Image: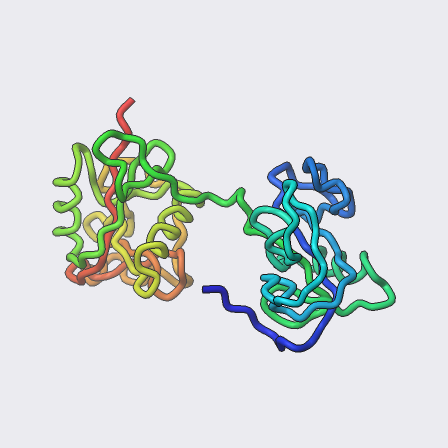
Length: 278
């Protein structure tokens, strides 16, 4: 279901956009994607301004039955909407002041009001999610292709069955040879794990990660024996080092995507991981 905000009766001009997978570019330049040479680059997106007055919903979806405007796309004549101008296109999303200033001044200086994706603003543009962000892909190891996802040279899987820390670790060891609760070694890994949790259980993001504090030393170790070379703690955490109150590592407590030390006896969902055989 798509949720569109704004008054459905107001009509404004708009811009359509399409993701450009090429490297980062400085604005403004023409888009260099084949078939979209009259579009402009805005960051990693291609955008196009349409001087046609439509309400918010019609601009995004083109569901208005009496809309007369049509365009040619892949040799098929279709009713106009941002979603039909190019694959993956929507009303634009804006992620920086530079983008916002560019969009608000570039296309029609005599009428600066247009639609943006999500709310009424100064105009509207079509855009697509930045495809350069890491997204989970299926693990390609035989016997582990279903529900397991690749994270560089690891396969990982989310389990929606709350267990305490120790039980979760021993459960992982039974899932595959060499498997443990997952270790995290980069921002990319952390993002992939967060995407997986959001995919399977968006209403309960808290999970065990595979690390614990060693003998109240203030030092955390990964259960799989890998180096501790990355960390992203919740603000102010860990708070209970040097004691036995909270010795196990969890993710998504107060701040989504960040870590916290918690009591190992608490039951949480978890992610298992094993290294892909060479």
